[in-house]
Length: 512
Ligand SMILES: [Fe+2]
Image (cartoon, rainbow, N blue to C red):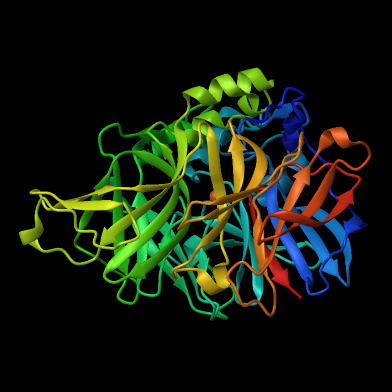
């Protein structure tokens, strides 16, 4: 295992300034001439407002990053997203909107009566769009997991406007991981208040080129195939009553409203895409946390669902406070030992059930050891095939050749390797043979690898992988954009910049 005693990863969580105009990056190696366009990524860039710190990884104010590739040259640009949370923090020089793990204290200048009235005006939900950026038709939106998304200009990185999804669809929040089909149709899952304060999930479908009518609290990604939608219900939930009542309490934030059910395990739900109707099959398995689906596809009456899981019911976000992530290496390791352990898994869901098969394994596909057993209570109990496992080593932030293989049978996935939550390598995984290829350098901290296929690609992995890497020990150029050959994860080129680049979560490559 690689060690990080110098603690260079702490730089991932340091405030930086935005740029007034793009800067030129210093290229070593040769940028492929076919690589033309922009890598857009989101993450936190401001970790405190004056003397008030943000506490959680998902609290820092949203910074939008862009690397432009043109004729072998690379430029880097970044701007803070002008969300309400950011603009008001800048204006009032304090944290105004409560974030995921940081409570915003009421304005001390307001007396108790105005505070009382502002409570009845409703809760102010954050629009801090730090998680992802995605296209809807011709437009681009930055988002977090609430009902607010922010339209941005992908060329200048300027903020255009905030969009409240509640005005278009009846949801209170939507995942930061929508699926975009090749015709531009966007699918997302949102949650809404059901009967008796139960939480219901709504599938949101946005037809192509209906800009403005775009999509919008613990929710992970979901799976999408040509005919089905797979949603994994994990033991970690927002307690809605707690959410509504504690919101008015002094000091409460989103993290205080989560509950983990110790007995329910994980339930998987499958809906028919065209009818939007749930299948009446109850799939169950043991407890895990889930943030990212790798891919999902159909094969001969089965759904194959590949996931990046964290074993157990305790909420992994409990370990993602900035104080934990900025700790010295020995302490980081000690904390991560206690956390749920990561494992990439394949689940196989039979779509047709016959009562006569009770007690039997229903999975008849030759290439997987995953099982699905029909129980006498008519639930289907799933056991996974492990596709990647290493002690305290996660294969996370998975990416695939999405345009050609999203929702279809596939072979390769690219992921960020987390070593006790510290991102320290990039990994390619063959989900069929479990063979891996790794890029890793000492004291270097990469981000989610984005696959960009070659325009004349014949094979699934013909192309490059893009990742932002920081290597704080390396002198005047502490960060770079790394280009790897997707075949074997060998370096093709890097484009270095003279500024630090804090952690980014998700993004996309926009072809020119
Ligand atoms: Fe995510």
